[in-house]
Image: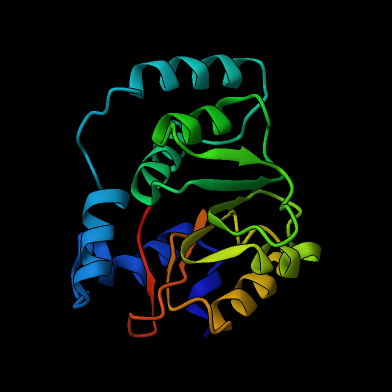
Length: 197
């Protein structure tokens, strides 16, 4: 049985319970990431502003993301502290980009990779699958790649699995609603199913 793509929400929750809050994770990097980014419960300076933006976008029907998703994207940008960031398939002026910009104000964001330039943080929304190779070419060593809704369709699920098999993806986290890969050759290759829902 494929535990990565279970149809029923309670079954997905049970399949991911093993690494809840970092339990069973022995890598210091992975444990720290789960504790300080995925499950961070503290309050950040940007949350009130992002919550207001999210509520407005939700009322207007401009986003399907939950408030906790927007906060996670903020924490991911804050964790990555990338000089250059790329995003695809996301609202260029909306709540997602606001969360990414607030997370790291020094990051220069664009929607297209420049030839020969590498990005430390890449965030891919829906429709990234056909151009996956282009984004991987722009992925800097030591960087982070975030895929929104990697299990939304069978095609996206297969593309996500192919990303996880790539040599660049040393450590990956499958949160079901998000897939997060790290290009860190110094780490042991490992993947984690995390109960984020």
